[in-house]
Image (tube, rainbow, N blue to C red; front, side, top):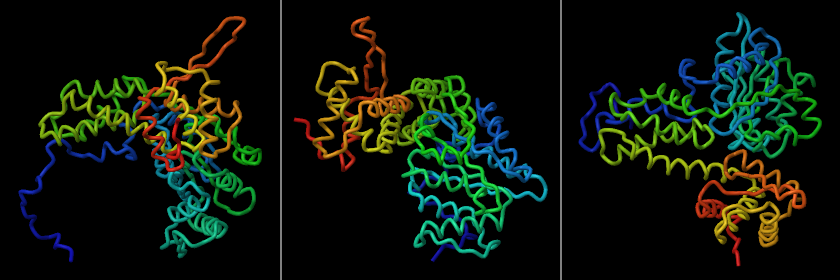
Length: 410
């Protein structure tokens, strides 16, 4: 039985009446979409994306957009922000529906399309019920088309981390729906990826139907990261942040490719560390402890979301790093180790060219770095690969994958 909410609260010494460190911790949530004046360093990207979606505001088709950029560069934040503003700015008589899909969670066509139908459906308007499971993919598409036509003139759909989808079917069907006569409502897709070659690797039918414009988000610099955190400082109680906390958090994040998510995560965790320590003030030592924690979390997130082949490639570089005094290795040597791992785990062995692409993708994500070595006119140019994270941490993280646990380097 729920307690009567109108009754006076009872003081209990087991619980604090207020938080001595945080005043509004939600401002430090990764998925939080702040007000316009809290979004830093992305005015140009906001303006460009708004131009691509402008059609929806006036009742005709928005353009499809492909957004690239490293983790923590504001891609999802800006996309959700511009979609919210498009809904508010819609001309009289024009209705816009928006939905966000995290393809890391809904990574099959059926999961994604059922989530879209459920999120965009207002049963009180459509009189349509969208079950979470139990229907075929084609039936979920039919429900989606019905719900969109019953409610909206245009819909803007954000597909975050689209490269984690099992295939390209969802992107192709959404971008072809209006042309194929499936729907009267116009659909615009914002596809977001860390992989700059994502569209290049899709089939020709997808490229033809998607007809996208591209936006690239550059990493934040230290000044922008500092401003981002200053704009969220009211997540903390007045006076609890020492003067060096925000600059140090920004400096750590700037070292890691300008990742605003990491900056905010460090700041939030520094507050949590201080609270657990019983401190009244968040200080430099708490930031340094938080940075170590955030680095491991960031790396685990990157590696755990990587395809099996990428994990095998990273494991190859890791084994060389762990068992050698060197810290950088030629691609040919890493590939030889990769072949041994694949043979041991009974995995397909990719071509050298595809293997190099995987290493480049991991370098783009900040897991490793690649350096060109010129060996002169006779030796030519070679690539050396070096892990950025501690090899032991990398190895432990990769071996958490049940498929990789059978590896036993002899």
